[in-house]
Length: 288
Image (cartoon, rainbow, N blue to C red; front, side, top):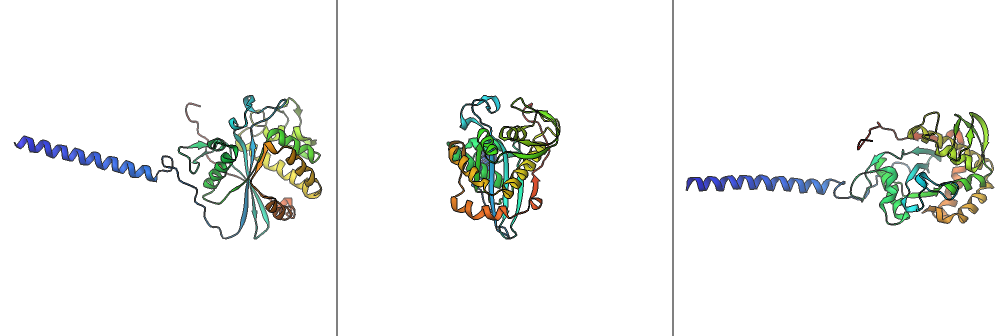
């Protein structure tokens, strides 16, 4: 009989331990966003901002396909992500690059992703872009980034041609994805040449990393901004292209918002635009 009670006590202790273990695990799962997805929670800021995520989608058309020649837009990644943050109280502008290979949580989505894959978490491209905005907000500690503007590579080429290209001081000699060779120094870049420079990474001969590429992208964006600021009539050319390329240019910015903030942005001096990038340590996962 004593042995019987001992077995009962042992079973009770083991059962209690297993119950405690499973209960703790269940409690952990409830609070673990990677297992139990949670929506983004925005924080309040002392000043007012209009934050928009610019997205360059790795997709093209005949003559300038994206990486690996993808033929479906939904299969492509967001390989360029840049936040334009307009401070509505100080009327100042900051450009903040988010490297595409940043490891991130995508609010509302189970698991963990590279940032450029957040766009693939939706059933439609619009859903994916909203996920990308949420991931950007999460990386910035909850600062709201709810507006987006996304273009594919060919639309970017068309936009570059619409403004008549841009004068730019190239910091390196290299061969672009189009096969064209470029040399260091000041030169005029048309739409295709703008796209080659924005895209240069593995073929770059200077700072050929994701971080290095984001720096070149911000510098070229400031040059494009400067040209449009000095020639505001070019905005009509840009709007015309966006109307023609509506299938590969997506935005949730309303016409009212665009009208309201464009004049404020164009009033900013190019030298007063802040240029930042979210940095971190490089790590190789899954054996490369």
